Image 1 (cartoon, rainbow, N blue to C red):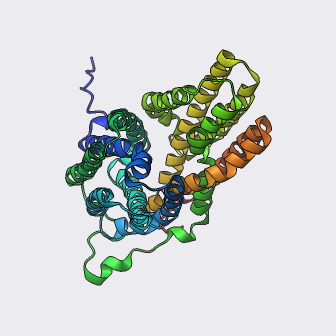
Image 2 (image 1 turned 135 degrees about the vertical axis):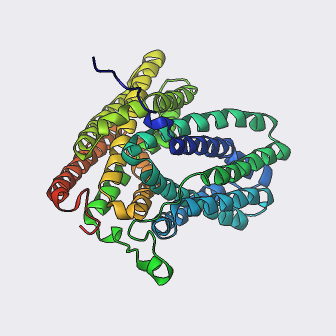
Image 3 (image 1 turned 60 degrees about the vertical axis):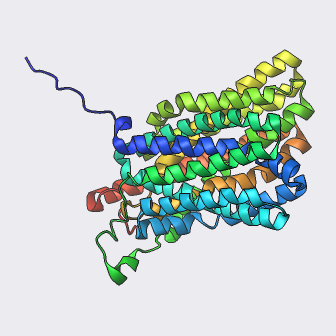
Amino acid sequence: MTTVSARGPRWYESRNTRILAVTAGINMFGTGLFLTTSVVYLTSIVGLSPGHVSLGLTIAGLVGLSSNLPFGYLADLIGTRSMLVHVNLAQAVVTVGYLWVHSFSVFLLLASGELFLANASSALRGALIAAVAGEHRVQTRALLRAITNAAIALGAMCSGIALHYNSRAAYVVLILIDAASYLIVGIIVLGLPNQRSSANRGARGPRRHAVKLVVIRDWRYLSMTLISSVMSIHGALLQVAVPIWIVYNTSAPRWSVSLLFLLNTAACALFQVRLSKYANGIPAASRVILASGIFLLGACILIGYSAEFSTWVCLIVLACGGIMHACGEMLQQAGGWTLAFDMAPANYQGQYQGLYSMSGGIANALGPVIIIPLVTSFGATGWQLVGFIFTVTGVTLSLVGRASSRLYEANSHIAGPLSSEY
């Protein structure tokens, strides 16, 4: 009789995955603490006007977009872990700087530095996952997103203590905890391998500068990132459009805004990893993204028509829309991660993940500009138009993925997974 050997450790039990998970949890807990209180701190304690805070964050967001690709390139050149350690140390310094904000100019400088480094960290983490997670990189990214959602929610709940007291001392404690979280993460990350591009590995002296910036010539990847940026505006639905819609256009109670946030956070924490298995490979990812566009269309239709119903029916319709939104969001994320990893040459994952990480920042800038005018001007019809945008981008992104899959198959017998010079 054949005996079955003991099963080895699962992918999420590896040392590298545990380190990534712990650092994501610590980092996002600190972010959740300060993120949910920063506007209140800046307006009620520092004395800045809401208009100045909004303007500063908009400018800082644009500045932040300039770091993704350069830091992804530096990850290939110098090493992902080394860059991430230094970025975390810099984030700790910038965060502590908020203790000395006294004017709009200082706030703008700190906010720009903060988002510049946050985008750099996002690019480096994508490259680090590509380097150390192997064939389970999409599942690893899904796991980290689930942990991120849970950690931010926990941080946001703890920040309620500072909001209750609304004193400078309370906010100082939050800022210092947030800064400490970056220092702790920087130390823990040292336990990961310092991966460089295989095209640069082992090089010395001038040869270390031989890494090429190839991603800017890869029109397929550029197209995929741009389309993903448009599709990723689904984040603005929950953060901006839905709260405005509920408060000014429906009979639902105001606390239903928090309910939808809770549904979204819980769904991502519980099901993001499970759904990611359906995006294994470019063809599967293309199908998942197509399904994502349909789910997001359904969510928009339900949210738009919620204004037609009485309080409790409206609340049920909104909850159903929120669930469909969460499903569409998780599927889009899983499919997008697969395309981002699998369409990138193995030799240049740093710069490719750096470029792809820009899609979130671009979406944050585009989302309110696209969605708010449509929803506020056209009501339910506007919501349908927003849903149509998701469907069109889902179909387009799926086609880009399928075209890349055919290219992958054509090149696989020559150079293995996506030749570094295609």
